[in-house]
Length: 119
Image (cartoon, rainbow, N blue to C red; front, top):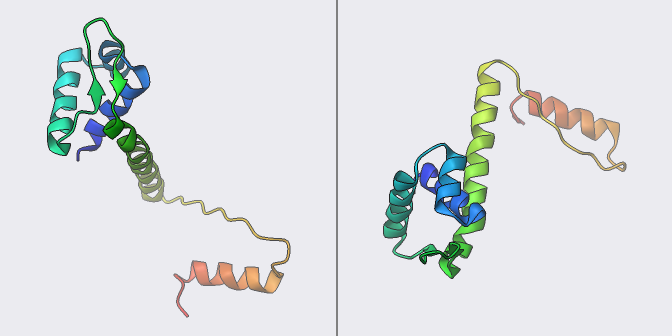
């Protein structure tokens, strides 16, 4: 499954209209329709109900795909951001600590993290 196809799927699902989704994506409607059809063929299901003069409706199969598509595309974007940040030499790690955690345990955890978790 191509991430671009998933991004296109999400745009159509959000806009409920192929032309508006294409405008949002900065492409024309025919290539968008072709990519959606490719995704539907790959999955073997219709993702949208289409009708002349009717808003596009997401099918049951499409609704099942929605959370996965969002998770995958958002994860890919987070990965891209983190890899680029690491390539520039800066990585930020944030974590929360319960008040009951002792300073000794926190210091040991940070030390182990910096050392690559070697024991």
